[in-house]
Length: 470
Image (cartoon, rainbow, N blue to C red; front, side, top):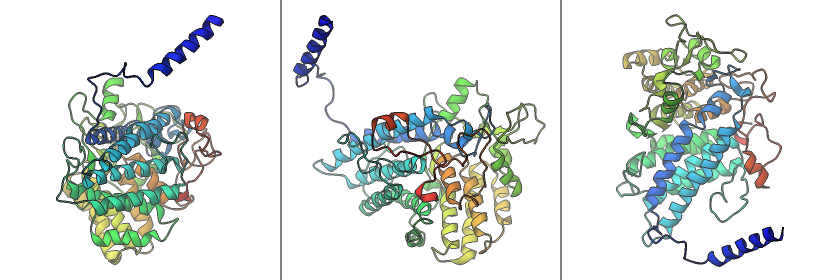
């Protein structure tokens, strides 16, 4: 025992002696960090998070996709492992890198305002995504390296903080100047005009999530739409590109290729999505789903909340798991459908005729993005009913939800904000054997955070509503 105590004292003494010494410093290690490299690393991790860790629990828990496991709609299969990974990556690999990059730029001899703006926009994107998943989160004291136990800011403060970050970025952008450029800007290759458009579109998404709880946001929504300052074409899409090259492939494809031999056998056709497509006579059915290996041609069979899959069960289409499929953060179709909603709700001028025009164009662009031929997409979009005061909420919400089929975080947020709990679109039911009685409203804080940070909110469950969807 004495020998053990002596060894511990010696170890601590040596540690104290060498902590201020340069004896273990590698003389070849760089002592400076390029902010643009930190930005690229954060962007890469954010995209990987969106197409990997967050896809499974969010798509399955929100019933956008169905599971190949015991339950067809697997709210009952809450996946704590991937959620723990997502929380850690968000704060360690994304926000910490962005904070360090911003601090380096702001304290440099000649701060680059465009680069700082790009960082603020990506931070607002990350924080808004995180609060839509968890609710109250560390924001004002997050990932600074200066606070051991960061406080959890209320969701309304986080969302207002994201809008503030975006306003600061938009005001400081010089569209003709340079910021972080290719190859480290993996979204827009340094095109600041496009960054500014994305910032306005992201601001619109956040404001729409807030407006039912805070009606004052309607005027801000109207100002963005009236100014025509947001994403306005396919070329403006905010997306992270993947390539059909080893090491550069979409992670969803890589998972299927490595662990399933290229055979899609994990993600199945969800009945709420399928029923909506059938109700609307929507041509996206064979583009969203593929028939099961034992099914007849065009025999689409969706899983309910009580069914296990069979060889006839329809699956999420393999074309949506292609190696070069980009991760889309914001699309032209999403923007058009937001504009249709803004006009129909009276936040922006134009009336129902203008709202209908935006709706049809948004649906057309959405269909084409999933592979529907252009002529068929145009014909279907033109067949949609004209918007009226009686139908606009349902018609627009249905199309917004379907447009986000491959973007589960945004699709789940859209579903929760589409109406009160009894009138959400689509209307979901809690699957049997789910761990709670209510619907899936949030993901849970990881156990490590709960056990180590005393500021972590207590008494929340996966069916506890958030501020924005009450």
